[in-house]
Image (cartoon, rainbow, N blue to C red; front, side):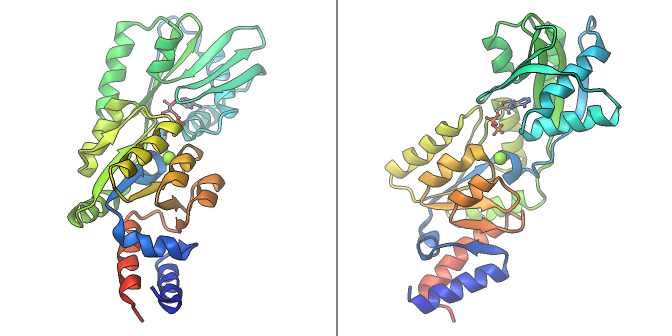
Length: 294
Ligand code: ADP
Ligand code: MG
């Protein structure tokens, strides 16, 4: 494309709330054969709220609520935000913690002032630490996951105390935007750190057959690389720190405007609105630019 066409393309993009940082993305966009979408914050609104909460019978709820809230207050994960909000509303008082650590892809751990270790995270974390989980809670967890909710567990190093279901609404634009991409002949994939059951339920709701759950940030980048090795031109769309490696690896990188600074820094295109229709629009803009719009 001529420098003038590029300038026009970037200008048209801006009018549609699509900020394009470089000419290369604009020129490559129309060649994209595969689009990878992150789930949380990209396909979904990224505003999780608690829908179900179940305590184990023997749990001292007052004391444990304080611990759970205080742990999640130290985490930057959107799921943590939903939990903190709920307990704040209930007037739960925070407690001091010693030690707080994130466990990549699984959750967080912390120790309270009595020296008791606690964990908050997914089933993998619970299994990994060999923490006891009773059948009744597993049954609940499975049911909620089938409803496309994310299930997390709160436990000491010995037993699970609570199971929490968190739902994140699918954006109203997701299904239609994905259909548009598929109709263009593009392969569309969804990747998420969330568990496979939840991934499956969300994928089904938006009409996707290609999806993968329980992926680590580095897995997302490897997934991109693998498609590239097969000759695909890959666009990655994401909003989180956990998407930044994959964004850096992709041929065309698209960040959601509400996303983390790192994702926006790495990506060459930023979507100001969270509307997923901007993705097919950005790719069409590229075709127009290369053909020389005026
Ligand atoms: P993603 O945000 O794409 O799900 P992450 O690697 O950030 O990927 O997290 C993977 C999983 O680990 C989450 O889906 C959740 O189950 C669990 N997790 C991470 N951080 C927390 C937290 N602060 N509280 C509860 N669960 C968490
Ligand atoms: Mg995300």
